Image (cartoon, rainbow, N blue to C red; front, side):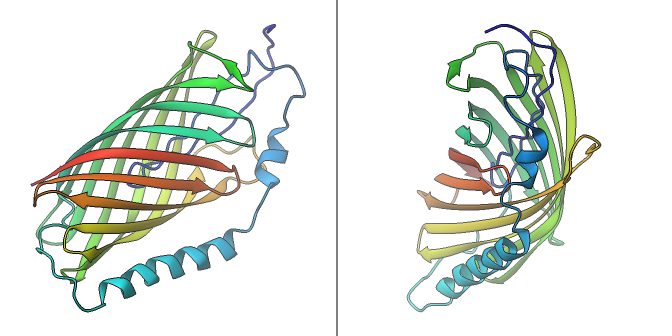
Length: 255
């Protein structure tokens, strides 16, 4: 398809235990007028209702953990781990498909302080049903927060994070930043089977070209702990205004 100087800016939010990827892509392969950015951000703006539903989901998971008959090792739900895995993503609003891998280091201090550092690397596979092989994406993230443990069967976290994303295309490199405010919980519903959920408010660092600089994401997942150290999990996350869906699988080593 003919190159065009028109810019198309769109966000791809990714959750790797609620990691977020925001990508700015110069649409050199997309004709003028294919999509208007303001239409993307005006679509489906119901954050208040979604936030209430997310809160209900997290509270519901906590209620499951309070049910009798679930016994667990107190170390299964700690946030000290090294995790690696892959993802696939589809953004319906602008018809984008992407895939890649990520690695994350998370450490829970004895004071209840939490720090997470991660790196993601991937590529855009399709744009408007066209195969592409020259658009690379990467993300560096840091998250700082606090965790609480009401019982050995469920745990909660809250904190703030920052993501720095880089998009590398044949026509140049673009960088962007995102702030996120996140809360969530993890619940053992069986001796070694975990459910988890997170919700995040997201703000773009530079939103001068958008009508709405904020968005909301919700993620749910499950994880099976083979031992007190090794676990395998999968998750699904949704960014609502953008209609972005992400499916992930990851292997984790807890220490």
